[in-house]
Image 1: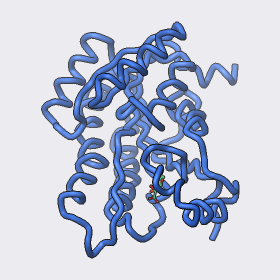
Image 2: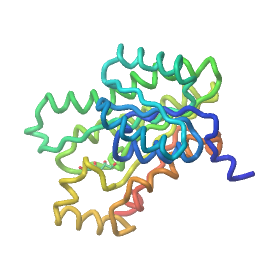
Image 3: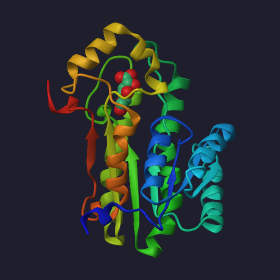
Image 4: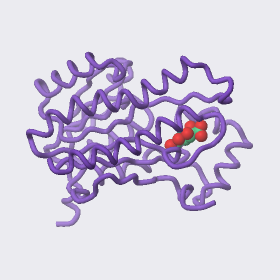
Length: 255
Ligand code: GCO
């Protein structure tokens, strides 16, 4: 009985930014848990490669290439997904980017790009999906926050601002949508081996700091986020709402 709580059989899950990295790892995991996953990104080639890999494992998968920062495009894409694939049960707002520079030299256009990609996208996609979930009386929203939802470090002030906002959007959505049996939670990845962190991993000093600052003593792998994603997408979390689940090797629990 208890393991069936984690089954996603018969569910449709849209994961934004899932052509690679954390998003793709979570999509593969939700697919293995039984969900029909809809992959999203702007690069149709990457999506098609990812789709083929999942389909070759005999699992249900679709792709929907659209830019999560364009509200009209998002609305049209969500309408098409619901018409062609079916009602979205699970939304993982994973699309995001990172830019690093000293605050006093941070280009305004990079600020706007981070706000667009990491924050406006969550508003656009979540609104388009939840206005269809509310009448159905069920749904799961999983936002991808960060250890930076709680902590700051030099050179990533704008990114940190967006991830703090994602944490508070999660709580606000939990407050407003909970009565419709829609649970909204977030995952806070720690230092994970991804494309966005390539420069940090290559920096021996920084990488050494991550290993000493993280009780697990190492960087995390994208697959280590899958368990939290399945949990927060499944019936196992039906009474969890507004929670930011850190998957960070213990980093945010220690000084
Ligand atoms: C950085 C990193 C971090 C983390 C990310 C994990 O520049 O410090 O990109 O921001 O990788 O926040 O959640």
